[in-house]
Length: 351
Image (cartoon, rainbow, N blue to C red; front, side, top):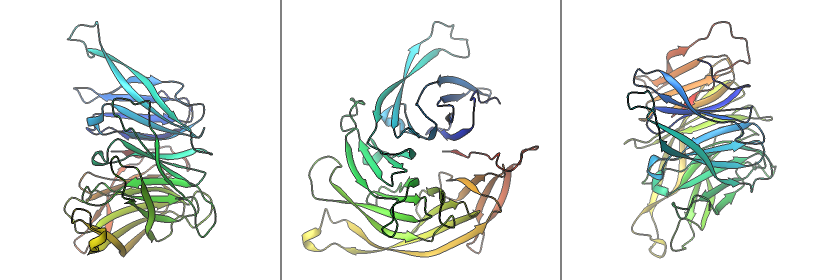
C-alpha cells in the first residue's frame, strides 16, 4: 500500500492493541493507520509538520494514559502528541463514525544533538518516557500530573553513550518490562557498546524522581565499533522465565541474543525497603551470535518473548525461534520483496 510519505520511512510502531500503527519519515511527517473490520489498513490521520527535521523513532504510551504518541527527531527534540476524538456527522453505517485531531502537548528540548530513540516506560512505573540522543545522554521525563500533559519535568539523566572515557551517541534503548524488578533498560551506543542500566532509588519520598542510574552489566559488543555501531536493542517480556532475554543488532550483520540471570541477595538491614530483593550482579550466562548476512535495522519480540523478528537492508523479515537444544535458529522468512536493491531495506513494525 502507498505510505503517503514523500521520503524514507524511518520507523513504524503498532499501538498496544495491534489494531493501529504509526509511521514516521525523513519528510518530517507522521501518519496513523487503522485496521478496518475487513482487515484492510487505511490512513486515519496525518501530521504533516510534526518536526523541523527527520523523525527517527516513535513510541506509543500504554492506553491507560490515553492515546499518546511520542516522536524523536533529528532537530534535538521529543514531541508528545495526544489524539482528540470528535463525533462525526457521517451516518453510523459509514466506515468512520468519528474524526480525530492530533495535538502536540509538549516539546522536550534538553538534548544538545539529534534524538535517535524514544520509549515510554512500562505503565507500572508511571507515565514516563526515556529518550536517547547523539549527545550520549539518556534522559527520563515524567508527567507527574497525568491530567497536565504540558508538564514533563526531567527526572533523571545519565551518559548512556560514553565508553571508556570517550564520548559516544545513544542509538537505541529498551525498557525491562518486568514489574518485579527495579527500573532497568538496555542502551546501545554508536561505538558498539551495549549496557544494562538499573535505576536505584535515592531514598526520596513520593514520585519516581531521585534515581541514580548505574551500569549493571555490559553485553558483548556489536557493530564492529565506529559509526552507528548498534542499530537496535529489544528486551523480551519475561513471562515466567527465570532469566531475561535481550536481542541486539549491529552494522556487522550480526544478531546477538543475550541470556541474563540475576544473582540476588537480601538487602542489609539498614538498606531494606519493604523486604524486596535487589539486583546485585548480572551474569551473562550465554550470548548466541548469528550472522544474518546483511545489516540489521530492527529487532522485536512477540508478547511472550518466544519469537524474535529482525529486519534489515536486504529487505527481508526473519523470524527466530529457540529449538529443542536451546539454540536460536531461523524459523521463517516472512517477506522477500522482488525488485529490491541493497540499501532498500524493511523497517520492522514494532509492537
